[in-house]
Every structure is written in C-alpha cells, then in structure tokens.
Length: 124
Image (tube, rainbow, N blue to C red; front, side, top):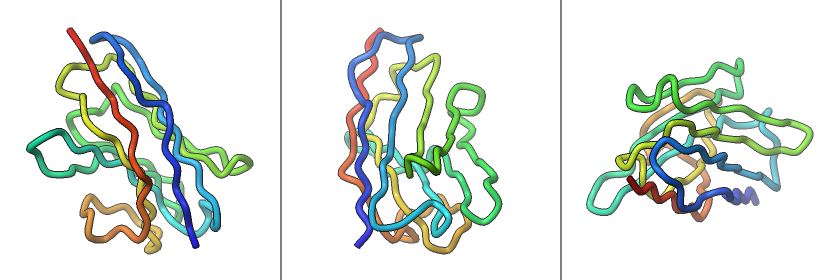
C-alpha cells in the first residue's frame, strides 16, 4: 500500500519561505505523479503544483507561479515544494497526492492516494 507523509509546514511571516516534503513508501515516483493541493478553511481543495511521472514536467497554479517550486529526489523517494515569498492568502492545509495516471490533474477526485496534510500559517 502506498503511504504519503507530508512535513515542513509551520508558522511564517509574510515574505518568508517554507519547504514542504512529501515522502512516499510502497511505491516510487516512477509509478505516479505527485500533486500538491491546499485547502483553506471554508474553501475547496485546490491544486497548487504537480510533477508528472511520465516526463518530469512541472505545473503550477497561476497564484503560485514564480514563487513555488516543485522538485523530486528519487533516491529519497521524496517530492518537495519550495514556497518563497509567502502571502497570508497562502495559509492552508497542504496535502500531497499520488496520481497513478502519470499525468497532472487538478481534480482531487482523480487522485489515488493522499497524505495526512501539513499546516501552513502565514502572518503579516
């Protein structure tokens, strides 16, 4: 069974940075894409960034382009989300999810596995 474990969330001042990690067990990143989602209170879960297992292409939501960077370390079976210049509106619970299709989708219902989430709080 695939397990995803996120870490790296925390409290940060606006303009600061955090790096989230998504460690996988039971599979490798050759098998599935990884999508980072976030969900703020009262809002729907939204896709933030994805790294495709089929060709390594990365994708970003417009709201985070130029500030967030997704990367993977296959030796550690871990995907990272480097978040720079954080804004108060970035505050949310962040989740990583595995998509066995190998592509990148922003639809939560398309994901096959989820992590438990890590909280990001940004204060101004």
